[in-house]
Length: 156
Image 1 (cartoon, helix red, strand yellow):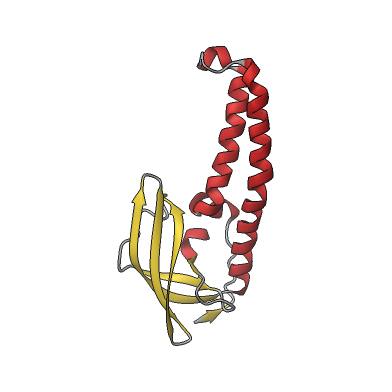
Image 2 (spheres, one colour):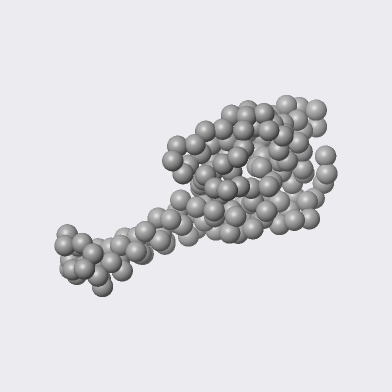
């Protein structure tokens, strides 16, 4: 067990890999995209979208920002705090599954002679698609709540 990992998580990698942080970002981008399409390209790309629908999509995009930016900020803060205070332990993947671009990885680890299991909702990417059941992984464990752990290499 090593205390205080020097490396910090990458904001880009958190948004790319963590479902809880990445899905709200996608929702924000999609709603703003719908607004732009409806406001500027309504006749070119889709005859179903009209300029009169632009205010609706603008309201939707603004609501997405109001709702999702705090969620993204909270998640980024969580990962940065975890990496700052966490301890590294070795764990093993017990299950992994993907459905399209989303997945869930479950793992087990020992921390202070107690066995724990945790899971993480992730996006399928170059960093995550090669994990297999039984793989040895390095985890970042929250010493204040050892039930919480994440796979270090996905986020750095």
